Image (cartoon, rainbow, N blue to C red; front, side, top):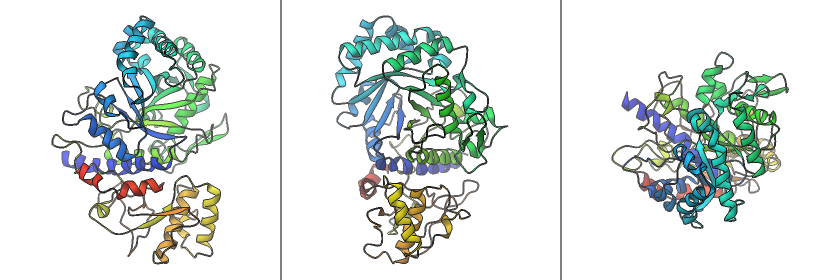
Length: 495
């Protein structure tokens, strides 16, 4: 059982690491960050975590407390940090502005400007997990904000708190969402404060819990971003294809009902467990699918049905399973990276994009679309590749195995690669007016197979069965990604 779980975690790592690396192509707007707790495994030094964050290209980290060792390790890294005030400290910080000022001096200001601290998160799911402090949450936030203002740091460092999506009282449709009336007297003034201080609403989403709540109305595919019938909101005439968008828009609607439609939503934590009481509730395969598809969805910059194109800043949870936490299995088995008692990161913790062939030294290459290229430019190049270029574009037709995701970037990558391989990888065959680049990792995914140089593509991992194949993921590439993949010492770090 343990060996099977470790093998499964390999795929979680492969999928998530791949998608996190693609963050390099999206340095502005929507982004993927990660959560980091201070209670790291005993064999993991904070510097190892920082090294991993850098190698993944992640530019945003949320710390759940103000651990000095971890903060110091991020000095000069240019990674933007959210620092947490733990729930048990809220009564102390709420007692006076002077106490908040002292806390900031000892735990935040001492690290400036060497550590790029951009926010203070006061408490984590306080109203649902630490309800006794609910009435003093806002006073604590105000004390922190006022102390920052005195230090002229209130524009540079924002103040917020992370609240659970469980606080939403809703029917199945996002348009029906409202905050639970039990908490409305606390949430409304909190929203007023966030608006006045030009901050943001932080939402903790547990997609498995939401799926289990509404499983009779939808499917597991809806929660995992897989093709599905979706949900049609009859009040707004908007179609929803995944649970994540529905949860975010539900939050916007709940805030709008309290006269605050202007507040942005930041997803403070989200995960799919790698282990649960049943395969449906938690499995490495479903975690891998969720992680891969979530990151791809966020970095598409498509926004949500209600707010197309809106930035969605999302912090995934978290580099290591919190094995020390007591409780329901599926609530604390969510590791992004597997670890053991011997090394900081074992051989299974490859940075995702490496298929087994790539790790073993394969010289195969593929041609894909660069990240950040406008759709209009990709469309022109795509039309040329499928027309004059005679690329094989059948698989990206509406009935083809590579039609989904239906995006210019995905379709162009397939067409570019077809032309590149048919041209024998000749000089200039992977350029397309600066829209394309070569990679040495297989961008195949699910049933979509990209032909590699020298033959057929690697078989892709089937999440519904077992095999010994590579697990491919769609690629949003950038020139920085090539540099990262070419940096072979990264493998030594992971061994």
